[in-house]
Image (cartoon, rainbow, N blue to C red; front, top):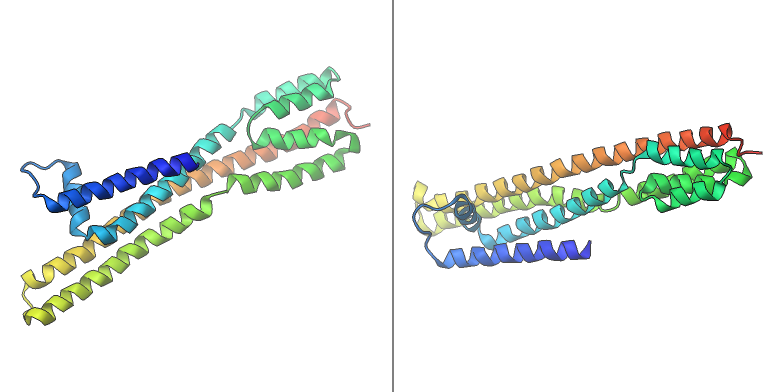
Length: 241
């Protein structure tokens, strides 16, 4: 996670550095879409827009980390239960525990805790599953609070830029003493661009956030179904004495 954050921060610094260079040079004819995007970034006041960009970079870093972690955690529960069932039918409790222990993901960890408490009866197994399941739920949701924070902050920074841009526009009116469009255009442009960029960042992160939430819900549902199935498998194989 730290390496991923570092890479995203390096990218952000490079983007800001490129923006400052663009500020000192005139754009060549036939600008690409990337150059146009950077130009809008500069027009929105790059010093202020950099905070919006940092929100995007850090938010994407947390999103990518969660997506990778959740994909690794999505184990094939049917195959896992089948292997556990085969070991229990052969009377090999240690083998069943080793299967669960060697499998990645929260579902396998919860099943391992249930198997570990098999000698204490079905009530102890269910209690262990519920308790450890709550711990795994917390691990799955780790980092979501930061994604939510960046989703909230990005448009706020955009709206703050809007206010600052309008203040600049009125300051220019007061200085010149004229209400012509050319006087207020610069401030209004800053106001609109910061709002647009802030909303775009929030929309991008919100899409990733919703995908992560749906992924977590899917894993939790599989975890609950597998836990119920484990108790049935253990009962059918006369594990409880």
